[in-house]
Length: 482
Ligand code: BES
Ligand code: ZN
Ligand code: ZN
Image (cartoon, rainbow, N blue to C red; front, side):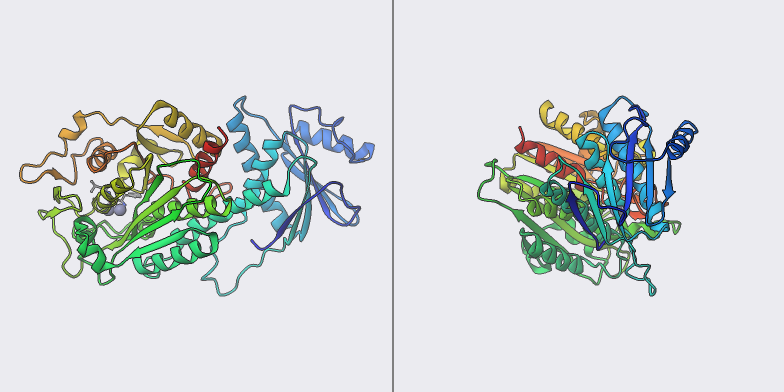
């Protein structure tokens, strides 16, 4: 993604490609604005629209005129936004195929739709080609957005958000043996320097002196040391006295440990740090866009392997806050490292803590890839804000219960708690485990189903999606607009 976007007021003549965009509820032909199509062209467009051809272009001598009709399939605003993002991803595929170097886009529709359209286009332009020896350069070098209402600042803001999503995607897509815990820390520091947030990396001996037993136990099997990362954005004009803390699961590769995973699709377990990636991306977006909200990110990081002195099923681990945990499955490692981070978060007296983790296969089984399983122990107002941000960004949340009965399922006979429940309600028992280590308003997002796209779809390439970044950036941004 190396092109520039510029806002212009009028179209340039015959030099660049033009994209026209309509929503089919509008009177299409009459509303062509100042595009002077010939009668034959208009007739052609009208015929094709009726045939519901979605996207096509008219070839002139010096340029192509792309015409895209976006069908309004729903009356819900947030769904329309998604229709625009998806439409943009289809346009992107076509202009890439046509090797366009410069395009002008005019969206004849409402302002917020233009934003979604641009967002969808930018999100589509991502590819992870770092390891391709022959890289396919994108021909597209410039986009002119014809708009009287969108400001350069708005475009800048969207570009920062998409860049942040791409930072998360890059981290997720990086192979596990490259992105060790220490390498992850190095990259967080680099991102922070560029964006303006601070990073404090605690190394293994510091983690030992803090007695973070959960993080250390998961790391026993590894030759690569763990890290504990503290990211902070604290602007002088922050509107909140107590910080909002994001916690992200940073398991850089999850083999399952001694409770080894089966081989099929194990490669995808390089994405077990998607929660961490979402926290890094979100801090990048918030600080790049200079949002006046004090936020902190906590990322416990390690791999989970069966080597060295790997922890065993049956082990009893003393956690950072003194709780003892009976380990019955070493593959339930996420909650072990997150428990220490959640207990650590108490010291900030946070307004709210939001945890993101590829935590359970059970969450995937329950609702698949179309939504994130959410647990919310907070006031109704905050829940609604999160749900709304989820709908608007289409990173949708489905609330699951934190009923006390589920805590019974993780009671241990020989320790304070055990690290797995039974076969039933696995996402919930995992959440109940985490909840034990909190004493503040707490939201836990199980992103196991949404973090990694095995096939690729619409504006998400195959691989890490960067889920959470747009959701949380939107949630935080809305807080200042109240
Ligand atoms: N990282 C996995 C969860 C996961 C599964 C993420 C599929 C993405 C896709 C997690 O550490 C894990 O292995 N969880 C176990 C817990 C079980 C042992 C209680 C699971 O869900 O099977
Ligand atoms: Zn696991
Ligand atoms: Zn895991």
